[in-house]
Image (cartoon, rainbow, N blue to C red):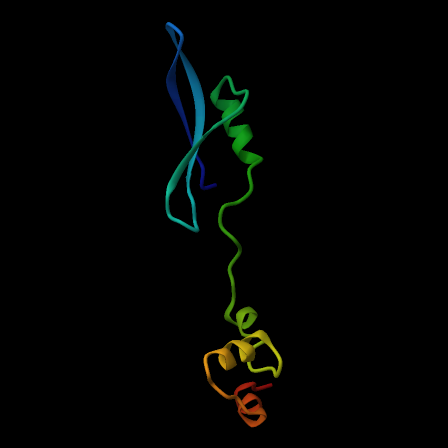
Length: 99
């Protein structure tokens, strides 16, 4: 679990009320974010709520998953290389794409 639960006091009119928040570090930007937990009265409710939230980090990405479409004629990889001015022949594709 990559969420942190915290309680803060907030002024509401003349009195202080406590609100429950959860915080996390956004994996794409690296910025810490905090959000209020709706309808939460105690710590058990807060932890029950964050158990329903999705996992922040994706599963492990393997190199073979990234490279499965490389050096196949007509693939995105070859089109991207051609946009950068590189010319790839069929022989080059066959040499780099080992079975």
